Image (cartoon, rainbow, N blue to C red):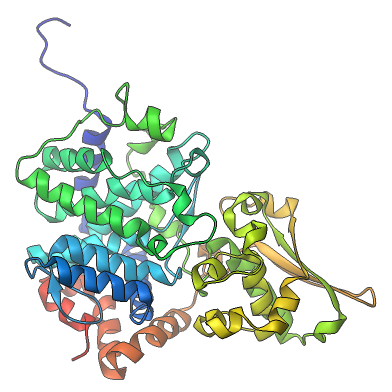
Length: 465
């Protein structure tokens, strides 16, 4: 109406208000507890990547770039700028492909939000409760985008799902930086203007840069928050505008569902924790293969076919492409249904040892890889996307068929890792870097994170004493 100065809030303004409305005191105990489990697991994954080529390149880049000593680098204790710490730590936690995951229209690795959360919380001296609340809010934004953005999905439109992290990381960083709702909306608008990421980075032969998919976007989210804090503005109608993100990138966004109140549902509780460093959709077949191995594996020359049963969605992903049958590098091997199933079946395990160069080139394993067949399973489709189930069938030369199905992958909320399994995974990665005493101290500090009064007292535990 002419003369009226009131306008409805934009999508980003509503999301910014939502992020600021999540408070620790209102979080159910199970949400706080699960957030701590996710933080512990994510840090473990980062320690497991310390000796990787990706870690070396990222640390050298940060050292070469310089920056104010604002935030701690995991594993070394050195400090760099909050943005570069987000990039380095984000790349570390993602490298093994063993951090948490979620499936909606698009998949998500929402623990990528931990890198900017730790960096900004340290820079600002925030307490543990504030960090947990901000992280829960970031998970919700990130996973709602996975559910409600994309027609039919970002991935099928050629965009990597890490694209969604631009909004969650910017909002998280802005809140922890002490920005108000208005500035937070501008931070999200700035980030969303530039950080749409192509799916090609995870197609074909996977390069090292795949590990930085969420980390690079999160670094930009931090920089967007810093820019907004210094007065920079962004297009607040970025999502719904005529040339906006919904139309040009996503194709469709259910903005009502995206900005709705929580109403008791926390998507953080619906994320899965990986027991193996493999693409999420391979977790169930890997468990099935390990179970078959433990039951007594027939001689390799008696196996005619190894049938990997999967939901139909998984068969349309790069992990099912024929060029992944004989992967040349660790990144491609971790994203190969063929390789993950065969090596788990042969070894009865699927950890770092199964992705060494010598294993990738082993003639006996390559013979098994030639027998792998991927097959759609209609029953598994009924559980998708709530669960990425899978199974293995061994067809033997005498006509015998050995079968093991896992409708819910290990680490799924309905098949959660025990406290002992979670601690075992964390310590296996952390102890070689930190030592026994320091690794246990860090584990205990994470489980008491809401008692921490200043993250600058917590972050020294991220490096050896």
